[in-house]
Image (cartoon, rainbow, N blue to C red; front, side):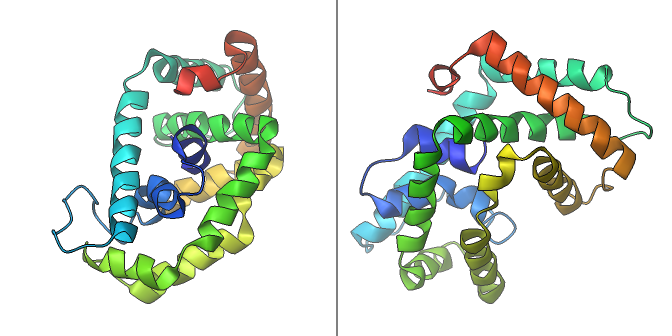
Length: 216
């Protein structure tokens, strides 16, 4: 499950720390290995709420990835990709199908619930960064400056808003592929992928309607 879906499903109104914790395992990937280790006894409510949000993230991810709904989304993505007119091969296509399914959930949620996305970014902007970094030090964060730069960029660019645009959605898929150390999607395949995305979204909406119920 991607950033916005975690927030949309599990957020608690007016609990900034908990809500940031919901997306922190993904946001801090590459900087912190895991937030599963319990906090020491001498911690404040700020850190406890962050930790609880992280645990909810892991719980929701585990349940979602084992769900029939997610497995059906992956199978549907595979079917769409099998029938696409790609010019070049795509290495580790199963990885792209997995990422496409997760980002598509965010895309559909954003189109139907844009006001929640405003709240999502407001939450990130309201967190006390110094206290957040203090929490991350408990988990031996690497490259504090780079994380802070990454975090500020994420808040500033607000690229999840652009998931609704086909070209920028493909761009986001490409970024994930590159970040995973895989080859970029070729330009010709990107055009074919746009058609896949449009058909995939229509099929999901036809088969499942309001996907909210399948996520909770």
